[in-house]
Length: 124
Image (tube, rainbow, N blue to C red; front, side):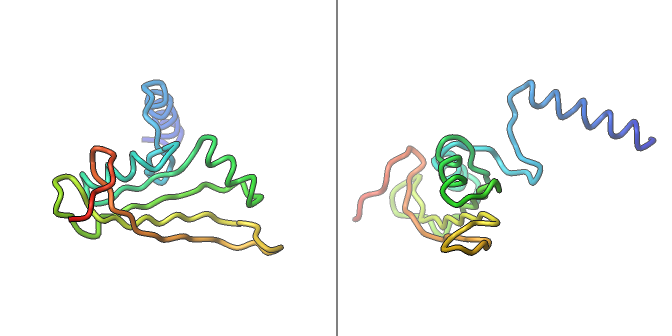
């Protein structure tokens, strides 16, 4: 198949997926406007990869004077005693962030206990 045919076929497929409402960035990350879908997906699958969009992402991009994507990776560290609950590690990354007069790539890692149904587990 020629390069032109592959390019046209790829463009048609991308347009079709967008028309269906399938949202993923080129790196295979799901597009989210808040963290909850990534936390839930990680509990179900062991990990989740996303890219933040929407008002919160726009605020962060403006605050740090960058137009780069906010990538988020979530992985299960271990299951908790309550059914559907896990301890998760969340890692966010953004390139070319302006902070204290310097530009650099930034990363933030933290952990959270979360349940599939959207609640935070109680201590037992």
